[in-house]
Image (cartoon, rainbow, N blue to C red; front, top):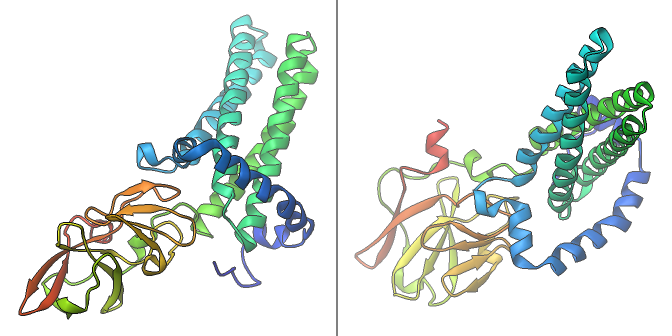
Length: 303
């Protein structure tokens, strides 16, 4: 994936002054990749969010962010009033945030495993800030339990600040680098009426063939029942070229990160992709394969 130009955002310019992040990522990323592989396909698909049809990590981050914000509020009430309920609530939401932070970090590390260049560096900074914040918040809870409440509150304020900076970098990963967004949305929706794209006898059995229809790439395939299917040729995860992927039965596997898609429906069967590929209706007329866009594709819904 191409890196942004040297201008970039303030956060990116700061992160780019830290080349040691690349060295650290070089050591950690292979370990993470091996760990995810050892976990097996079901664990990988759970972490990617395939089962819920949306990336899991952003959903989980709401738990620590919301819980720790509540801790901040009730710590304030405690300082002003000394009310017991405020102390108990602050400690409870702090503990809930720690549990949610561990879960969010696990899914986040899984998302980071395939990144490279500037996005990997930004992800490394994002992760380090959040891990440091999580550690300080855990120490805060321990101090509170030990009766050193004010020291625990100071540790929490520091951790909360670090987590806030980490959350901002997480937003940049989504909005600047486009991490975990549906890349098909930004492509042309394709033809509204049937148009011929290739001769039927040129479509190989058991293979795939990419055609360009205007400014959109479409992947054609002859399926096991003899029919012809068509889905977007760019993987919606990171724009990988599906025409270069392995055909396995009536599925195709992206060559970049091994997302697997059903050639009939475009649905992801294996992550990291969690969104369906844009799909096209097909028909054969006068020896030619003709296609038109399906009305329910994501490109149509955002325009």
